[in-house]
Every structure is written in structure tokens, then in C-alpha cells.
Length: 329
Image 1 (spheres, one colour):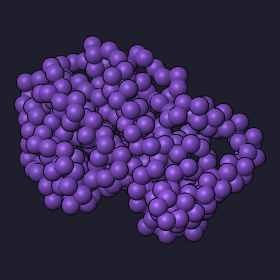
Image 2: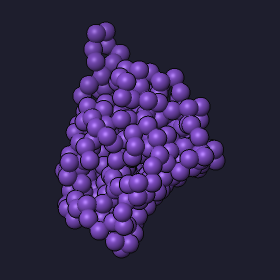
Image 3: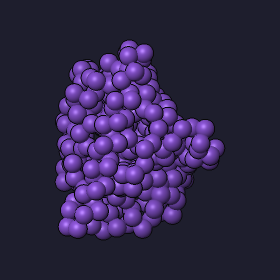
């Protein structure tokens, strides 16, 4: 089947990285459903991207709303081919300084939202090609709600620089249509991140769930459903735009701040050649993996990385404050 006959869903697509990923999928010929907790933002993205793109307000923490989005795209496109879990939220500071509600929000959106989206997508991708339009009965998602998020420290990605090429095959399933799930995680899912402890915990959970579920699929003999985790470093998106004077987010600025288009390019690459984990940039992925493998050494090096991030923040803040200057690095 061609992409033109297949559906795709992108969560957190009302702005930032999610919007660009939705545009990429539409450009590849997919019928795309963009979701966001902000209905106006989701609608604006769909209007901008054209008639092949529809929208729904979806809260990824609610599995009923997520399942309804899945059923809607199957009705509209005939089948689900790609699901991108991009929605995420970031709040910085030590865990003990955050309210219980803030901590719960990050865990539920970043981790549970990834679980809900992945499970919903697998259910659709395992259906027989003659099963037809969805499970039915869950209804339209048009007025539910979905969390935006481009991926804080970089919805980053992990080990991935080695990557398993074994997931490219489309054989061995029991009759389902198959498909590809792309989870935008973060380098924070691979290493300790001071100032973002709960965020990092939620991203570790998302990565662990994704890889474990991929293993479950393979052990069940299902090879035509792929799961890829894209783990970027800090991305200059709305999630970081207000963090220039926030010491808690310093590590997000300690590497080369990514342009959203660079992460979209990584998503494009894993869609063409699936791999379990892809770190962006690759070198940073190796660095954080080494720090995680040698925690005592990594903890000693963290103050240097935080200091570098703070210098970058101050420099960008000064440039943003200067007339006619853009806050680039």
C-alpha cells in the first residue's frame, strides 16, 4: 500500500516540533490527524497544512480520547500507518520544590501519554486488512484535549546511535496491516538531568516502555510493527523559549541547541530506515550514554555542563534583549 492511502497521527502538533512533523507526514502523502490539548492550535495547524490534514483536541493522558483519535483516522484514511507520540511538558527545578500536580502532569503526559498512544496504535496496526474502519463506538475526538510539547531537553533519544536494523522487516505478523510508531523521547531519557529530575524520570519511562514493547512485539512474532525512539538534545521550540533565565533548564542549553528541522530530519530518517533509538546529535548521545554508564564520573562532570548551559542562556538572553537581535547561539 502507498502512503497516500494511509493515515498518520501526531500528538502535540499544535505548534513547534509536532507541527513540523505533521507537515512532513502530509508532504509524504499521508492523511494526517493532528492533535493537541489546545483545540485552537490544533485547528490552526490543520488549516495551514491543507485538506489532507484534520484535527482533534486530545488529552493524551486519557486513553479513551486517544483511542477515539485512532478510530477517527482509521475511518478517514482506511488504516493507520504512522503514529508519532510527540506531546510533552517540561517543568524545571528540584522535585521537592514542585507541586504534586506538576510532578503528576509531567509523568502522565510524557510517560502515560506515550503508553496510551503506543497501545492505541498497536491495536489498529494489528487488525486484519479487512477489519475496516476502527473499533467504532468510541466516537469523534473533536472536543477532547491533547498536550503540546516539543520535547524540552530535547525529547531526546538515546542509545540510538548503534540502532537495530532488524526492525525494518514487514514479515511475520498475523494478518495486521502493520505500521510505525515514532516516540519523541529526549536525551533526558538516557542520563541524569539536574533541574529536570521528574522530566528525566518520565522520559526514562517512555524509553524503557518503548523498547520493552518492541521486544514484546518481536517475541510475539510481530515484525511489521516498528517502534522508533528519537532522542534529541535541547530544541529551540516554545518549550524552551521562556527558559533563558531559568537555571533549572541549564542542561538543555549545554550542548548545541537544535533547530526543530534537525529533529524532523531524524524522524524522516527513521521512517525510511527504522531503528529502535536515535540520538540527535549522535555525538551527544554517546556522551550521555557514557555518563549514564559511569554515574560517579558523570555526576562529577555535571557542574561543568550546567555552568556551560548557564553561559549560553545568559548570552542568548542578552541577544534577545538587544534591538534587532535574534536569540541564536
